[in-house]
Amino acid sequence: MPSTLEQLTNNRVKLTVEIPFEELKPSLDKAYKDIAGQVNVPGFRKGKVPAPVIDQRFGRGAVLQEAINDALPTAYSSAVNDNKIVPLGQPDIEVTKLEDHGKDVDVEFTAEVDIRPDFDLPDVSTIEVEVPDLDVPDEDVDERIETLRQRFATNTEVERPAADGDVVVLNLKGSQNGEVLEDATADDITYKIGSGGMLEGLDEAVTGLKAGESATFTSKLLGGAHRDEEAEIEATVTKVSEQKLPEVDDDFAQLVSQFDTVDEMRQDMRNSLEGMARLDQSADARDKVLEAVISKIDIELPQALVDSELEARRNQVSQQLAQAGLTVEQYLEDSEEEAEDEDAFWAEIEKRSLDALKAQIVLDKMADDDEIGVEQNELSELIVRKAQQNGSTPQQEAQHMMEHNHLAEWMEEIRRGKALASMVKQATVKDASGTVLELDRIQPDGSISDAPADDEAAAPADKADEPADEADEAKADEAKADEAKVDEPKAKAKADEPKSDEPKAKADEPKSDEPKAKAKSKASAKK
Image 1 (cartoon, rainbow, N blue to C red):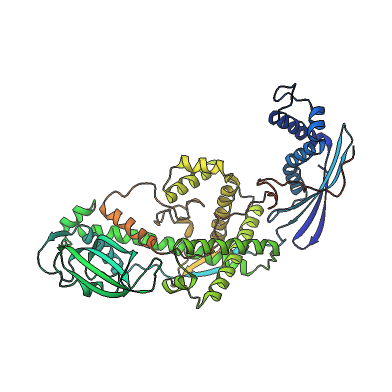
Image 2 (image 1 turned 180 degrees about the horizontal axis):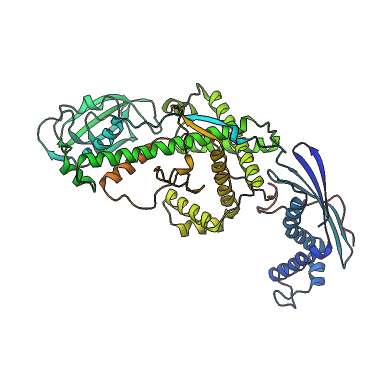
């Protein structure tokens, strides 16, 4: 299709596109067919209403509008490809010429759109970054073993007063000014005295109580509508059990793992922790290499794209906090965020969002320059990983992808992942001791292979298999421990946050994934 390109600014262009009648005719025929199948006209069967009758009854303009809207996506995409531009965001479409001559129709439209700025990637082979040394202290292995001891402990009910280390079953009832608080009331809570993590003052209150006895204390509530407010807490002990932990010996190792000795079990745990640490080290390296590349490029982001990204990110973070029942101030108190107040928090979110946007642009540029493609097996592997992450099946994820038109996004996710892996491979990554790290040999479980891993396999991924024994389950439990915490809302550069280059309808038009012609065009239809 004939088209011309006008550079409006450094990162915004205007396309002028003509749609020849032979290109519009299939859409025009389709529009007549669709309308004929939707309307009831006396004297004609449904779907058999002639075009002249449709023009007379409903107006030729309505048919042309539907035909143009159907033809626009293909015409726009063709113009984008012909002019070799990379759109960022959705175009502003306007039909500037619509002349109906009966047997043929002349259509012309303009599309103003922000585009990827033109820049050159630096020589990645000159980039060198440093990451911390791989370190797994004995305390981490001991902590994992202690988790297993707790799991396999034996609890024996006793009639004596509760003491430190005992496991008690509690009923808790919170109140303020004599009024019971429903969200501060719970029954049959199992709690180990001295373990912490619950209400301040609970240990002191229940220590010394027998089953059936109660104590009242004042504490600050940790969640709910009355979070951080003082309340009177009545704790009633319904059961006291003495807990006995198993000795850490070879019998224990055989009970909780596939190993015969404690030394073998400890070594397996250390290997697992080293693998997790190696994956963290690898992720840190990827972030630092990408940051180093971005720091060497001056990218001018389109303001409309920036505004849209920041608004979407702010809404996303606000929704996360609302779902967790937290304000920004409460989140900052509970998290490890360095921001001192709400303004600093949102400023940091803005910085991360813009860094993520730049990262996407840089990775897309590298993927284009290196002509990185996506194989079918790579898409299948991504679907499997998403199923593992979401607790679903690959079939469900594939269906979700097709129903929500995520194919293009997921393909971009893979391309960006491969581009980042290529970038890291070209750079030099050293640990604090000066050792050069071969990150392309790291496997999805954190182990090191003799041969380099595939680009996609180099990224961390969940295992498909269920834990083979109790020790593996303990690893899974430890990995999930943070799920009880509020997710830290950050805007790291992620490959799973692609921006679609396909145009979308305007907000004041029916929802669609395709561009629509404006309701009014500058040129009136002539007939």
